[in-house]
Image 1: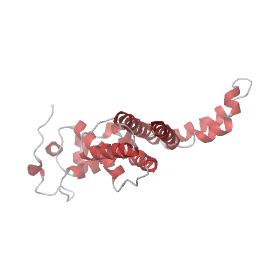
Image 2: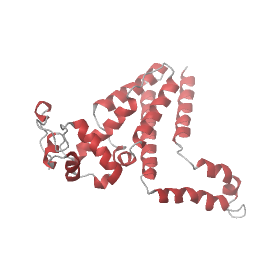
Image 3: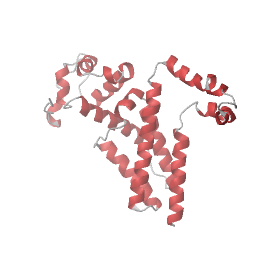
Image 4: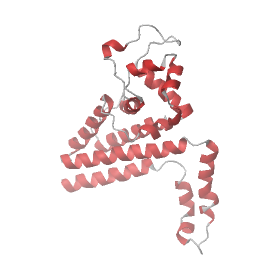
Length: 234
């Protein structure tokens, strides 16, 4: 059952927690990110969060109605970290590429959080700021409103989808990640032209391409498509 969230003016805890900190939404979110790093999404519970903060778990309901609302706050915090310090340069392609790479990097800095929160719509301040910034770049570049929205959706979904995909890989145990990467070399890199001619013909670049994320290259493809759309429009 959802709990009643205490108004902002009444939230501030008068006494420090056992760790000597005063509770706030920001502190709770930062602590949740730390717990996600060590315990994953399944390990993020109200009880564990309360213990990490040195506060009674029920105190957390003064700030969030439940874990789902905390998840939205985590997602918005990552978006805020992505756009913090970003400024439009007036060069639409560089600006969009910069925002995309920032989003991807901010989520990948917390891979377990990326898996948990990349698909969520927060409705919060940082998300609204990011939407406004991206649409502003696209409309200033000359795209019509409908086209600007389509490119915005593609850019954000691409960035967050890759963040979730790459985050899931990073969240795996190192031995498992290494085994997955080696599979390209030990399995696909050794297939013969007689059975798999196309894989054999491209084995070198195929193995090399699978080392690292495909996100930057895919992002450039989206920007190439946007550039073509702008050229046709003019």
